[in-house]
Amino acid sequence: MTTAPLPIGGKIRFAAGASNALRSSTWMVVGGTNGRDVYVGMRSQLHEMKVSLHASGKWRLALTEDFAKTEPPTWNEVDPEIRSADEDPRVVTRLPVPPEIDGWQHAIDIVITEPGLQTPFREKRVKGSSVSWWPAPKGQFIRVFGIYISNAGAQDRETHFNDPVVGVIKMPSRSYVVVVTKVFHHPALVNLVRETRKDFEDAGFRQDGASSPFLLRLNRGNDNPATIFDLGLDPTAHAPE
Image 1 (cartoon, helix red, strand yellow):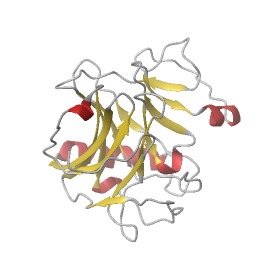
Image 2: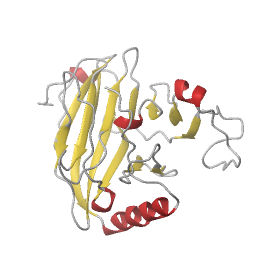
Image 3: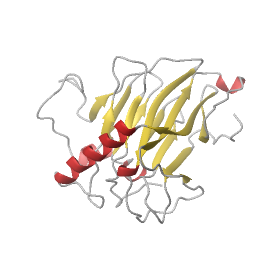
Image 4: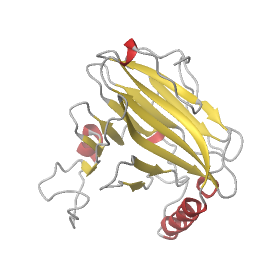
């Protein structure tokens, strides 16, 4: 990899569009400090809910411990495909762990579409770093930010990604987490986001609201990564550094 990696515990912040124009949410990938753990989420919501990809194989979307204390979750109905009846109340759902191919796991895809863009909003400044901005997709095209996690020893070998690299973080055990991006023509996913965003807006969600819905595709039963779709309903009141 030619991109200089961030140190252990580093944070990659990225978005599509521009700060003064139509834009996606700002997304964050955070490298673990004590193990090959990776955390992913919207910057504005990371203190409330995040995807945790643990080296132990426990991958999940869950509320943070502090947020769950202030907003105890209740689950009126349990879908066994999403979460078990005896699951930790903080867990929204477990994520399937993809296979390792050539020493790498394609962990998560974050999909940005034109119907999922939102109007500019104010964000807290990032201390000692910046947001990596990428052109927003248009029409029937999508921008995908792919998150890859290496096995132990990746720092001892040269790795090449064909797609543009957004950022790299070193992790313990001589491993990496890498974010790459690419644009695809995918009308079906553009339409999916358009229809889903409308459903959430009809239900009362809005860009300047207090919470944000997640559209998550788990892709159980195949080797594809879990997919998060940015719906453009990003709460902006409390963004962590």
